[in-house]
Image 1 (cartoon, rainbow, N blue to C red):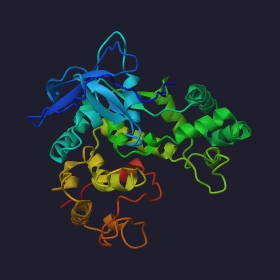
Image 2: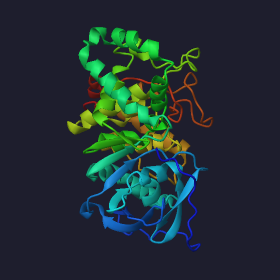
Image 3: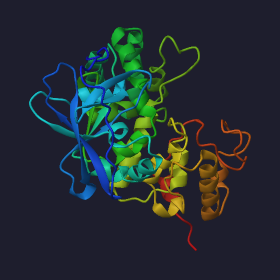
Image 4: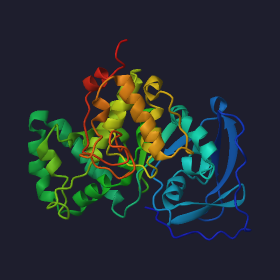
Length: 384
């Protein structure tokens, strides 16, 4: 695993300055070029119309701690990024060939709210058009143990019928709960990527997904199937294995299996051409997290039926209170009922104190709901 100290670049004090994006469908691609400087990521930035862009990979990751940073070179100029962004790019850097990638924190000028809004509106197409989506799950010293655990769990999953799967896995692995390999598995499930709201879209529309943890590749399909084994609806015995010695008394358990189930459900529905209403996606994803509370809506709009979003547009100049009021009012009128008030009122968790009580506070995490396909179908627009 490559967790490296900050790199000191012996370069002039020139900082990278973005060239403006001119058209509404233009994107930037980052070219990771071979470097002769040890551990220094050298890049060049190019602009392309999205529909004419050359083949590229899209990176799915969490930004991580903004206080932990590294520097890269873009067009010979310094550019500061988070450690997580650096690690994800370092894993895609090769000594003998150039790789084109799209990564949001670099390819979008984050200091320009107008540009940011326009680029975020393109993100569904950006991830859908990518040759592959690279999921960077993070770095830990015990990352090298994960593939063996996942492969073993996947074999066990195939051996047993669902009716006895939970009991058999519990019988086998309860004796290993304090072992380094099982603790490594629990640490893996605690990676913040699983609960990030933006990853839903990034994975749901992808042609192909490849996952990296540390510097090890993880088979995406195996990972998803193993995590779905631990959903409480399938087996309480399986879920009980996810309590570590440290959190057992507080009964806190990883949400990663539920997150994975939601990702795959949304992916399947989108692949089948289903139209997903924003109101149900908001209920389904209430426990997912976003640094900016506006992203709890914006991250879902690209996957939603446009009619279910009404006049609401992705706009980072709009404050969160106005945004939440606007979408709640539209959903209430459109659905002609009280379902939109399910998560509203003083009985629900609230962190936005100035929000009217009839408006759900989507910035707060509620208990995770596993929404069935039938429930999604039931919430199409009522007939006139």
